[in-house]
Amino acid sequence: MASGDASDSGSSAARRTFVLVAVLLTVAVAWWLFVLVPDSLEDLLGVALVLVVGLFGARLAARIAARRYPDYDVAEVAVEGPISRSGRGPVPSSVGTPADDIVEQIERADDDSNAKALLLRLNTPGGEVVPSDDIRLAAQRFDGPTVAYATDVCASGGYWIASGCDELFARDASLVGSIGVIGSRVNAVDLADKLGLAYERLAAGKYKDAGVSLKEMGDDERDYLQGIIDGFYEDFVERVAAGRDIDPATVRETEARVYLGDDARELGLVDELGTREDVEDRIAERLGVPEVSVREFEPRRALRERLSLGAQGVAYSLGAGVASAFGDDGDAVRGFEFRVR
Image (cartoon, rainbow, N blue to C red; front, top):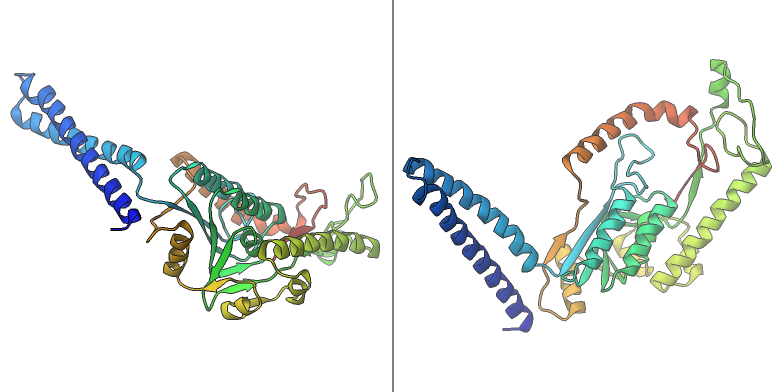
């Protein structure tokens, strides 16, 4: 038997033994407390209490055993949906995981001595620049092999994240790439005229209100905002080129297109094509073990927080349409949104 198999078998046996002993001790104590000691209690009630306490003890022992004798050596973290700080996308119905939560999961996995490798599962069309980079940096800091796995879509901000991993796997039908940056604004001038709305400028600094939807954009403002987008794009190209070991000219030649998995591999955007099992086999090869066991790390939220997030999502969906056209989100470049997608 290989050493990895022996270690897993030993861990499983120790965990089962720990749970069994804990349950027996719990039942024995409960029997003494609820059956033998109180003469006035009915035996049936005592037995019922013993069973309840025994079940409670079994659950508690199982949790403790899972921590002391873990059965996983790979941490999996998912990046799904649009990438943003809040987890909300540009469309009211599009919801993803908040970037800070994903970073927290990766850091928690890095602090877990049992997690020898990181599997980053990607199914995202992209999103905001800085949140995407925060996730990429967290993956880069992970102390161990990091493998990204593109399922349906790994585009733009998702690919930005993948460039921070040691390897990138994809499926034949995965859509990969879109290495580009977009800046957008809603031109609501004509609509505002119809509604009798007028924009009155009160600002200090020539470009403070560049991109505001309620006024026409001048050529100098357009050049200013385009310069910011070009800067983001050059940064994107440099990070991808360095992380994927690709010539920057090759990255630019992709022209922000998405590619099917096989085409992406031919261009060097993807290392290998394969299934989830192939990814796990590759991680096992990197760790030098026969096989790996994967545990998914998810955000830890209390029930109250989950309910609060749900209510926020409903409120956001109801108000996002009007707010996107007329609201002021407080950004430095007001009304103008930058996204790597």
